[in-house]
Image (cartoon, rainbow, N blue to C red):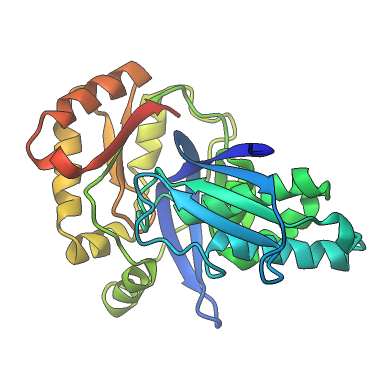
Length: 301
């Protein structure tokens, strides 16, 4: 019987600007991230030590195939990192009992919605509760696991800057519906950044200002988003042209107000006035020939 359970929600980049590159190779970003109801599910239970591992992992679910359940998985990496940090902070090692994670993988892999990062962040949250250690320790360690892990810790709308480690609360967002679609192709984030560097490079942009009062309607938010971009989208489309097919189809769905790719792809999203509109559009999408093997989700944001 699992002791603890949590959900790792999909992270959606409503826009994503690449603003620079550090000497260590990490890219600097500016992005508005929100979280959808689509999620992986992670449970934790106490276990006996296995080869001195503080955490073990098993994986099931629609997208379990091909995922590593060994020490290379971000979930077990997160456990080791937090375990070591807690001991450095004075936690009694004997109180940090070994755990086993069960991941039900419902989000597509390498799809631009932060699935692996969300899973790692979810593991950190569960371990802080189980080991009874300050959440601040998890916040400090999260950037070492990946650029998207910090924003996934609290799963709240945030502006992401730096390499993803500089987070500020997003202004108020309108109630809206969202449809997510992934055409079943995996996109390598490093390959997209490499293509960006080899072609257009970094775009000069003035500093983007968010309205302090937020956006009181979907129309206002979309007007703002039309002045932004996902800088990785054209490069992902060159690598996987089916992304353009998805975007074209999303824009034709009833009541779709805006469509764009999230992250480095290949997942794309469309925004709607209401969750019911998004669900109706999903039903229309499911009847199209192209979408037969596609993953999709619709609901509130």
